[in-house]
Length: 247
Length: 247
DNA sequence: CTTTACTATGAACACTGTTCAGTTTTCAGG
DNA sequence: CCTGAAAACTGAACAGTGTTCATAGTAAAG
Image (spheres, rainbow over the protein chains, first blue to last red):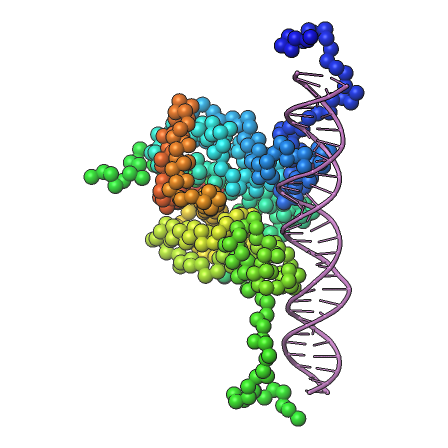
């Protein structure tokens, strides 16, 4: 009678496999494949069948590991945050820290195709994501801003990053469709704005060149700075959510 | 011989119709029906077939008036802007004017189900929409802010409004699914945050009550004010996009 | 070797957007 | 009133979607 709880001795090799022990399907592998499909096909054409095909597997096999397509999208959303680097709060440099975080986030958003579309409508309140939110809040809090301002700061920032990245990815998609060069497309749009009747659209005409600048980095940085200035302006002021409690 | 160009005399009744001259399908009517379906079914279940059914018409009939589903969505997006009230620029009150515009926009975003989802990824650069953008820019410009700040202000504002409204509508959708009461859902989420280990999530725990306040109006107004303060801080400063041009 | 638990399959269902050969309706000209 | 042509609308079809389920296959346990 064999003793079931005995450890396997090291010289006893495991039973041979004829085929090289086909790699089992896991959530991780499914998410990997989903990202591959996303990059190749775009968000609108990301389908369970494409993911299954990418893995060389039947569609229904995915549903053993994943409840829904929504579930898969949620996993992708979570994956997108992995390994985020949120620094230890330092009251002296909170603004630079927030900016670094924002730059990092934008970079991630552009690291795969259509990521902002995927992120839209998801809230980072799953257990895996809360630590990141907490850390970011800690950085904001180290500035000494009032509680109610702190409570909106995270939202304000993530809203900005998502919105900005979404716009960027929309342009990228347009560019993909147009199959021309970046410069040509920009030239076209620039020309369109410039060709508007200046008496009816003076500001649009005057700002066309800035809005379609070669690099969007300036604009991102400027928007970031504007938000930070707004937030910083509350430091030292009474909390705007509790003004009625003072006599 | 009848004279074709003569006006029809008032006593001459138009030729009788057996059926009450069935109302012809128009783009307008299709968009109307689409909004009805949107409100009833939500964005994800808004389909051409549902719209056709709402009109009592075959699906293919829609394609006579509308190129694509995308085309229809674009029409809905445009409709959403109709009758917007952007005031005449008044340098004395530009901040209040911007706020009024933002409040109006948020109200619209919540006037139909899932509107923010629809708005995401569309850019208000169609000929019908440009006048509104121009007017909003005019209001911003009347403040005297530098050109480069002006160029991002519109984006910054619309990004904020869209993002905020999207979050609100996501909550509304969650609420719809949960089929409970608002207060119960809020209580649950509040409880969830409050139940987190305070040593690992001090800020989240401390801010839970504010983040889940009864009214989201405060938060919207506060975020708005933060952005406006940031923008206003540039008035009188040199243009941040042209700092290198000075000696 | 047999049993058991789990994983993967293929077919099916009810949808989706879109097209297209025909039919119907509308309306102007004779 | 009739005719003809243009426009509007229909029904069926195609390729694709998310999801489910009885069945077949595989791996480990007894």
